[in-house]
Image 1 (cartoon, rainbow, N blue to C red):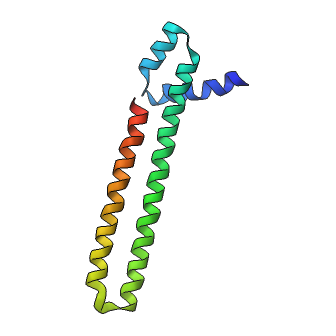
Image 2 (cartoon, rainbow, N blue to C red):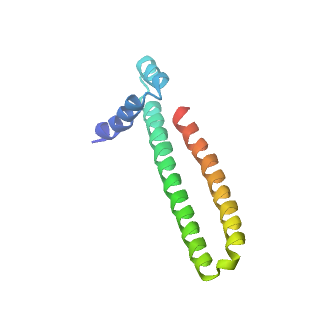
Image 3 (cartoon, helix red, strand yellow):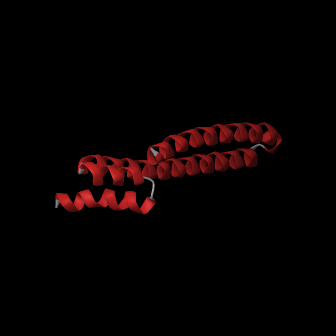
Length: 109
């Protein structure tokens, strides 16, 4: 069973072609655990990137929905609400981009 669990990260690493140096390391030294750690790192980076994108989409969707509801209740304050919404959405996007870069660095290295 442990052999099967060790094969999954190796297959992911081969499929993504993000870790060719890890394959050479395993072939040269025979250290399976280093290759396993590389595969788990790639899987963690990809899963983290997916969670980040889903969280940002939910946050911006909730922000836009609340802004539309607020504008519907007070149309005269629409300009200020819209400006505040755009600033908050830009901050969410900035944090999302920063987090995605960190996750992609885990996949590349």
